[in-house]
Length: 482
Image (cartoon, rainbow, N blue to C red; front, side, top):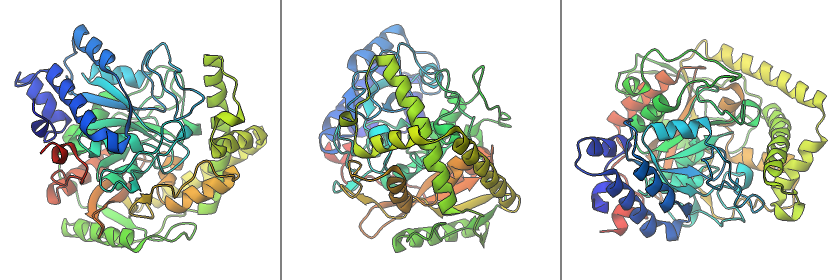
């Protein structure tokens, strides 16, 4: 299969070619490695290719799934595959591998995906930019002077540049949606509990973290959620199953939605005029499609949520890092971590059990307030990020700052996304605008708890009304190979 043909299909499209025997899974995998070869040197999105793993998967025979034969990349943080190293973006855990797949990885395999590599991630996921000391910075395919965002920046850059049609990411404060916005992709954060984080974890980041994918098309995201959603025995959360498949939902026209529009950052942080212009463009498009847009701000106390996040993230980090260290027989040393990562660990070790309980109680109050807000609105619309993109080096994760100071800096760039992580609500970034410099800008929609269906219906409608798949970044496999 020629590279110029490969990059024109989304995941469902490639799987259809395999199903019709117009191309083999082996050809798709070979083409994906070619796409990585021509695009990755300038981007540093993929930190390791997995040729032996891919060939072994093909030799075993692929299951009949919605993505049979489709090449796939996983982030170097969070989800893990059996015997495949997962360094969590650190120097400390380079080479550390688990003997088993997570449940989600096993579901990806059952969907027919072929794992071809690992993508770059900031150390411990603690940055809006993907620039770890362990692997070096990842660059944005739209402009190599900028970051693709974080923490799923490697996956976003890989998909945006045409290496694969979709890649795994996770999201503890916007880490799927922010890089989706900066790389011109569709990024959905599912409802807490929609996808199991078992068997190794009951919840990620004390409930803030969820997992899914970054995609070029809405339907790929929907079909992947169909393939990966559902509980595992022992999960702490059980939510009602969807009324119908998410893939079917994204093809259905939504009813007239009442959408709250919020343009002011909760803690008063400045938002780029270009991001506000993009928000206005999304408002006009939604209004043209018949939806009701109302200026309204949720009861979102930015400083309170930041304090809650500092407490719950740092203590979760301690348990996570101590567990990995025990698994690998590794001693955690300050010299082996970036300064902000070590600051998170130090902060977490000082937090008392009473402080954790107080933070959880405040989080409950915040979630109740947001729940009441969504009794009056179907969706909340905000900018995804406070800037069109982050210049490389703007966020130095090796700076000598305290963990609260570092989180304050991160929040100043992503003041809108973390609220959905705190409440567990589903949210998405949709690539509807581009800046004057040609950088993509996402529109951020938050839905009611458990209602991904509403988001997918609107996303499908927006994609049909204002398609984005034809827009390629300057550094794209299809551009480079012509």
